[in-house]
Amino acid sequence: MTFSTRSAWRLDPNPLTARLDARNTARSAPLDLTRSNPTELGFGGIDEALARALTAPSIGRYRPDPLGAREAREAVCGYYRDHGVVLDPAQIVLTASTSEAYGYLFKLLCDSGDRVSHLTPGYPLFDELARLEGVTLAPCPASLFGRWELAPPPSAHAESRALLLVHPNNPTGHLVRRDEREAMVAWAAEGRRALVVDEVFLDYGGAVPRDASPTFAGESGCLCFTLSGLSKVAALPQLKLGWVVVSGPEPLRREALARLEMIADCYLSVSAPVQAAAATILAQRGPRQRSLCARLDRHDAALRAAFAGSAVSVLPRDAGWYAVLKLPRVMSDEAWALSLVDAGVVTQPGYYFDLPDEAMLVLSLLTEEDEFFKGVARLKAAVEASLGAAT
Ligand SMILES: Cc1ncc(COP(=O)(O)O)c(C=O)c1O
Image 1 (cartoon, rainbow, N blue to C red):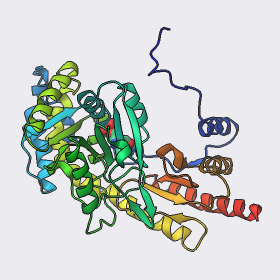
Image 2: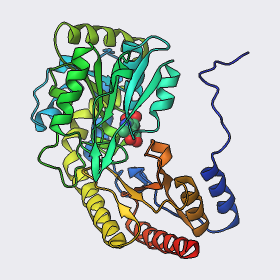
Image 3: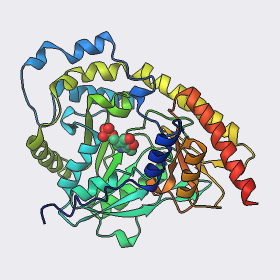
């Protein structure tokens, strides 16, 4: 056998991709309600100040620091100061992306075959990232009672090395509540486990509830790794800069940082231009985030208005770039998504994100205005036609 088991993926297209491919060759392109690449949706501009920062003369010299350039780590501390948390740059590890940060953390916390719990629904890439490190993911489903409710893993997860959570969640947009956070920190601290908290969407709050937890970057009750990066914070995924904030009790924190430094030293993957420009990029994020938030809020409100009083409900959303629709369970989420492709509109079935076994679909609220409004109208008409045909 030439290849590893961990790379033995099923590489044939899934049913939705196959249906889309067939449709795209046969007819006009459908309205796509899944687009979320900000650089293709009107948000990716690089202005003169940023272009200058990315070509600063200092990048002519290679001065690798495994944790990342000090000025860039200071800029990340500035970001957290704006969130009310004071950090030392020595607590920050820069990476090329949040996804790479997960790889570092799995290497740090787990041996091959170890288990990590993760709260579902959640980010689809976790399965692949864990598999690439030989880590087994143990799902821990959130409950949906009007709104999402999170609880720490049950006793069956006693062997888990860590708990992954996305705050606010992708795709539900749920922000962890303060009492939920306390329970999860206690679970981690009791078992000398770690919390890994992905906060890439933290700055995209719609209606942030009063009892929502702030960033975990200042968490001191357990070993905690808070992840984020420019792909969402600055809507600049092409620049490739992520980070991990390490917090928690000494000496665990110190040892985690020393080991992470060693891991990062094996790759030195963060490029000099983006580190040189990190302060400028983070200083510019306000207007960018405000224009994204304006679109997200407008589309969220329009979606709720479109489906008010209908058989489709739009689930509550605290934050983030996505909306979740709950459709009547006359067919599965995948069957709904396939029938919508036939009607000329693309959505993502909830099972991609481990949404519970119901007919849920995920839409990107970042889709451009014209496509979004036409797409939602077409989706509504197609759902009504399906329900009419079923009765
Ligand atoms: C929850 C979540 N975490 C991480 C990422 C990836 O971020 P990066 O581009 O920094 O790897 C994404 C991308 O969509 C995401 O949705």
